[in-house]
Amino acid sequence: MTSIIIFDKAGAFAENKDVARDIRIKEIIPALDGGEDVTLDFAGVDAATQSFIHALISDILRKRGAKALDNISFKSCNTTVRKIIEIVVEYMLEGGI
Amino acid sequence: MKIHIPNSAFLGNIDPFFRSFDPTEPDVLEITANDKWISVHPLVLSMIAALGIAMKSSDIRCGKLKAKSKHYLVRMGLFNMLNIPSDIQITEHEPAGRFIPITQIRTSDELTKFITEMIPLLHLDKEQSKTIGYAVSELARNVIEHADSEYGAFLCAQYYAKSNTIRLGIADRGLGLKATINHAHSAKTDLEAIRLALWPGITGTTTREGGTEQNAGAGLFFIKSIAGVNRDFFIVYSGRAFYKLLRKAPQAPLRLKADPFKDRHSSNENLPFWQGTIVGIDISLDQTKEFSLLLDGIRKTYTSAVRERRKARYRRPRFV
Image 1 (spheres, each protein chain N blue to C red):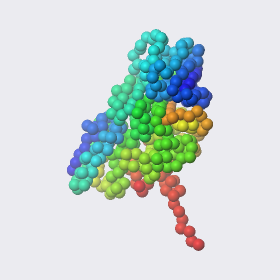
Image 2: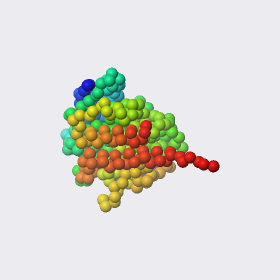
Image 3: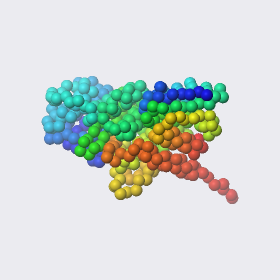
Image 4: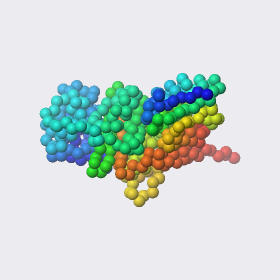
């Protein structure tokens, strides 16, 4: 199990897409490729932009489909962050893209 | 180029100000202002800063300003940004709680620093800060990623105590929406480009709906939605076209639309040519919904937009 502390990399307002891309490419994808489950820990993150979450997970959903969510958990999300994640996931999966 | 700062130019009445902008003779910038009073949306100042930044200070002409409220331009940092002298004397006040002066943002890291350091200066509560930070981040990041302007984005914001409103304006002198959208789509006019840019799932980075791994094509849609849910103004001006989301009456049902032309709006495609893009938004703090509630409305529209577009693409088999 790989746990990624988002606050340590993106701060209390997670909006920097470059940071999101780095987390995705350097940490999430290698962990999933290695057969590990990934926990994205949002403790301390007050808000995130849709762009940040999109850059963080959309490519994984697009390439691996909904089943990727079996191996990714979202921990300690406040209501705002949770809703943004739900919007991005729903959008990717509803769109079939 | 000539730009005249009128006595009043806010998003509700900004159309004549845009119409009066003269983009001819691009080597010289002449700034004039109403002699009696200047009360303008921060967008106006962002626009002037974006116009003047690439020019030598000797090519910027600003006549003696007579309006009583002329000190506002100094306090918002206009003359400093343009590197031109001003004889207007002001008493500097602590800016906290009132405004964010004109700020130039060129890189992703500058933006992150700006959001961390400047948004707290507005002294808003946590929920309101989220909304403002969200708008600033998405709008400035759009410029950094898509405008291809070496000068980046110019933004400033002002808190208006009387209406308890934050007004935010951002301007760039980059490619403009038509050129950006047409990397992947085919907008024939500037207004069509604005329409596509506001449509969720459409981005100039790919023809694929839903965007790329880095761009969802939803940034402007989210900002328009924030204004819509809060019943505030939102405007986009790029090339010759202008789109304004009009305020909804308090009793009108709140329904967000994927197609910006189906929202209550006004538009114009015969304005003086603006090379780049300008976006303005008002956020009334009295009616700013908790950010998470706002997201509920956006979610409904965003996902139903996907369904609508899938339906539009769907073709029945033809049996002949």
